[in-house]
Length: 252
Image (cartoon, rainbow, N blue to C red; front, side, top):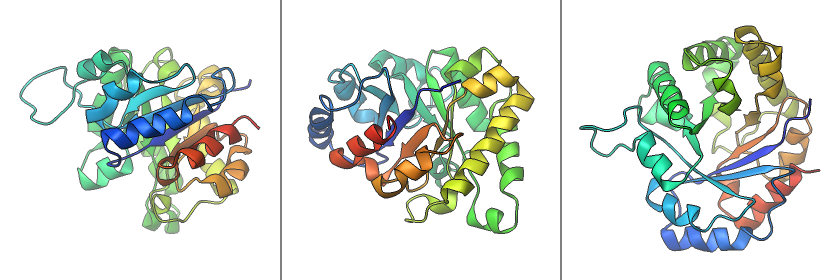
């Protein structure tokens, strides 16, 4: 089957409100039709509503993080209920920076995935190995452990709204990129694992993205691989022209 490509910008902790609005005005009228590619910008929480109000028909807005409780004494956290009230549809969950800097565990990530699905949000589940783990031939072991734990309690029906992003940690923000073959091998392994955990239909329908210094110079080669359905892009998504090029590469 043909899975619709998906290109997601992860702005991380970048862009003021004015910067963000200038960006969305620059890309709104130039993005390809959502008939051919889904396009998402995951922005800082403080500007989500501003972007949702200005998103065009070909663009969706997502958040970069979520907490798993609906409300309570969790100073500084954002609940799934709060996110849905802004109009966002997607949420990045389990990004390597959240895991390494903020010490999120697979248990935390699993709770967030389930909370997103309960409230109609689409989790973008990030998985990936460190350089040490890859050099010690533990990549597949790490990916299997993460997927198995992070998707605990997620039913086959719920998987329809789950996106998986393979992000080799050693390639995020370093300028290093897994070769297209390496990236596809990892994504193919993840797809087979989803098949093992669920069934062939779920596996074929699940969109698996590559995230690890994807940019216009290498995007076409990566996106041409059979098990890579798009990208979760950091640095190259901060410039509107660069991001537009990446989205258009998905349609080639």
